[in-house]
Amino acid sequence: MPSVGVEAMNRRLVESSATVSPGAIALLIIDGAGWRRSNN
Image (cartoon, rainbow, N blue to C red):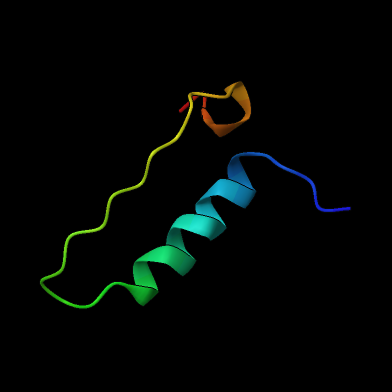
């Protein structure tokens, strides 16, 4: 089973950004779950 955390979210953002065409706009909606937040 996959685990969730800041590292997983960062990987997802990298993967998503690689699929957006240059000059295009991408919209990412997140629900504010605590595991997506970093202490940094």
